[in-house]
Image (cartoon, rainbow over all chains, first blue to last red; front, side):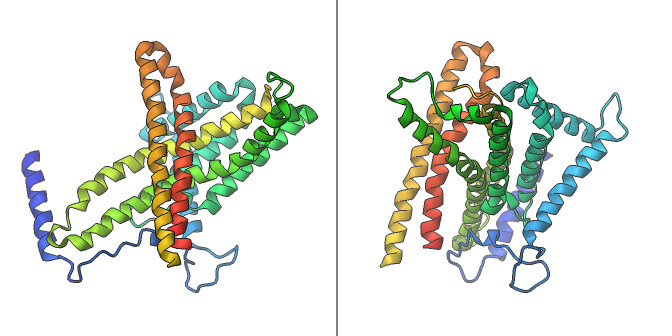
Length: 267
Length: 74
């Protein structure tokens, strides 16, 4: 039965490829068009308050998170519903990560880290819906998230340890002659952190979506074989689902690692 | 002419992503080698694995970004 269905579907795809073969065949690949920011209600001018497709999909992400967590935690049962188990799984997963990586005294930062993770993972997954917009593919969005982490870490470090926090850059285990050079390297690497933090997330997401569009663009040049890229697209899409989760995980765990530096500067 | 040079540069920058793939493969291969020697310690080190992969991968993404900028922004 399943096999028959598969062959029928394949035949349908083949026939539709022949019938709907594009007349003006040729490569027309515009992989970056999907990232254009457009105002929702017409016009070209974009001010800071203009509702655009970015803000719309951010709103969707926030609504989805609130829906999941509020629905998941209302009418709690011994036998959890699906929403409840997903919400509990996410909560426990992040809580354990904060405890393991940053330490038991970092639990007061748990709400912030949980918010970061939920926002990024939801925005990534919503972006994988066809025709949707991926907010995390924009450096402006991820740069703000990364800058907030950077500012939080720096302020926390100075509030908790005062001038001793600068000891992070003074590697006391190294020979004295090397320490000034190491201090410069450590200082540079400290300030490059937010850059790589935000580019990693946005770059990964943007690259994946651009690859999907490139494969889709091949359909125009293949004529009757226009159905062929669907196999490649399915495989890349599966990879993108994995990447969407892993990048949110990596962003969160790096936040934990940076916070550990602020709470326990070890050098 | 300038646009053509930008395309050559984009191709050169694209090589960086492949080299970063070597780095990511190196991290994963060494993790697997260690994990097979001591499977009981493997589960506790997956976070470290992902951090290592993320650091190696970031540089590949940088070169991908340079390629994109040369293709579309220059």
